[in-house]
Image 1: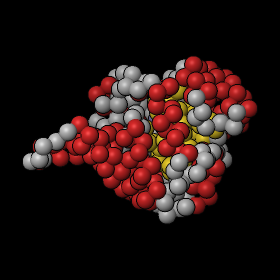
Image 2: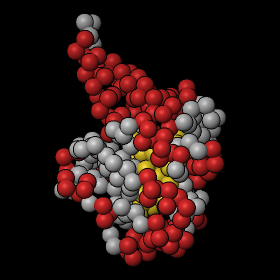
Image 3: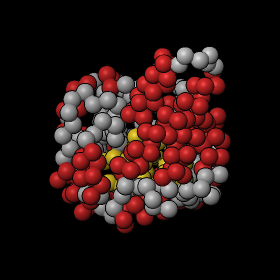
Length: 291
Ligand SMILES: [Zn+2]
């Protein structure tokens, strides 16, 4: 199947009230595991690579791998640059063939975020690339294991939550295809039990007509996911949980293995562990059996 537009993938999810998982894949085994899971679950999927992960794998090295996985997959796959903070990363991702980019201007002033996002949308339109932006700010605390550099106290800062009125203007003026919003989730491992502001989510849903995106999808209760999806979330970014569970699975296999083992065993285990966890999330997000 050729690469499918993220806008189209999310349109179906929004109409039918389910969410599509967006999974960070920093190497071939992760990309393989995610796509195998999607094929087995008959689920659309979004593969992504985050700018914060460029230190593990550069965009130019991982792009051909992700795109090949998408193009040879039996299910719809979009390939997205996740949290592109620099203009350079966003333009390079389009150049390497990603069909979606997330421009993250959430650390800038509202005016600068709006101006930069609008500029990127203008370029992306010409190339049929879908654009996600972030309004408000989903925290990335230092101690949460998600390459964060923000003070841990940021998780209590409700002033960073998305304002529904601002969201309406932002979507109108930028023309984005999807909007990541802040309503109580955080990147990485939750440092304390998250309390999601569902009323805010519903108010944002009423104010804008583009698909809404949840970041910080690792460690929420199942009912938080279903409630969020019911209220309009149709893309969920998920990485930390998958990265932790698959690493633990590999560690268990290494510890319990009595046979001789080799490096290639780890590659195979990696794919299996990623696949298992991704399949679970697809069932949880309701994207299974949609193809
Ligand atoms: Zn994120």
